[in-house]
Length: 193
Image (cartoon, rainbow, N blue to C red; front, side, top):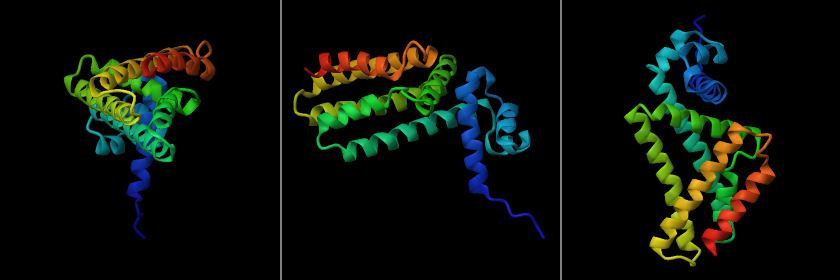
């Protein structure tokens, strides 16, 4: 009897292996072999799915974008108003638990690799701009800011989220969830007053 392959399950297993390998080992540790070890498969299977390191990195960044986009969509749809949605979206972007800390580490690892690769840099910018555009839209919908003010405030909020996330990913003991939230509260109060 021929073996039946579950391609969807295999892709999901490889996808998770790519993401977690980048989160744990950074861009230098993200290799076909490391992904294969984590997924419990051959490097040939990984190579069949991803042509090389750039594709591994792009995949991890796209997975990160989809996870955060889906989470933000839910938070936004469940919020009673735009101001509440804005708060929920920015606070849930922080690495306040182990899953989000892994996401922050993927973000940092991808950014580090993107510094020397224009294709990676463009993907990073594209996804970062999508987050900023969401913040602009929510700020405008809250009715407190005009378009140019909303763009400036969204930039400040995005910079704060990225900075806090970087600090918390690098030093989680010094930057627990409460400290992250406190720092972002200060920026949020200053930008939405």
